[in-house]
Image 1 (cartoon, rainbow, N blue to C red):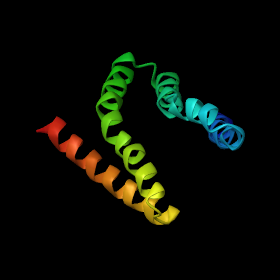
Image 2 (image 1 turned 180 degrees about the horizontal axis):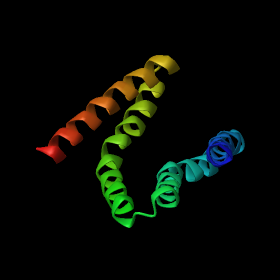
Image 3 (image 1 turned 90 degrees about the vertical axis):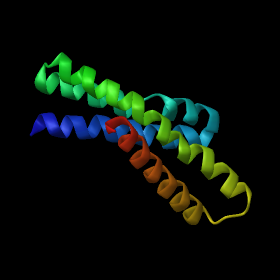
Length: 111
């Protein structure tokens, strides 16, 4: 239980750190957010939990393919906001398009 609490605390601290740094500097917040922290933490936790390098390699390879559709959100959100769209509607549209892009990439990879 302590192990899971530690994983949660470390992960939460990193997310809060990004948002706090972004309040002071959007560029530095973006640098921190663009580092694949969730991926790295997931890889670390998987290896610590299983010690299985093959599973880590598979996870890393799958992450590589799914980075591309994740970029859809960042391509769509700024233009929508600059066009005057409401924040929540822009985020919703960007998220919906990102989910569709994920589905497409997963379908293409498995086809």
